[in-house]
Image (tube, rainbow, N blue to C red; front, side, top):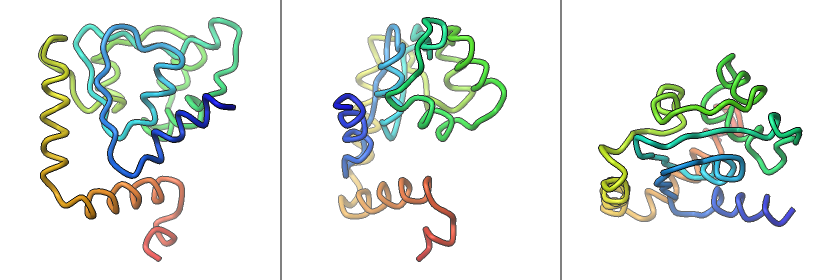
Length: 146
């Protein structure tokens, strides 16, 4: 679908994508942020993979991308099957976000600090690193080294 293609375009963007998440990140919000390379959130962010609770099948990439980011364990399956909300602390604990900002008002500043550190590096090195990480995620170590 067009929405799947739009989210995949974020994932395939040659430069790193940093997502600064606040408020409610539900359904398509999870779909979209799964495509980011780095995710941070504010302390009050609430996440939910709510499709099952609404009688829908998640079909824009969450069930394919989310477990690859955080693992296929029991907690992930529970979140997908129940549609229950999970907090910013839960998102940090399972590895969905790399950090929680000090406050919502500082979220964009903290995201910009990450971006500043990235852009201080060689653009070629950063682009090749992203490409290699994405390739390695979907292939064996041997294939990644070839």
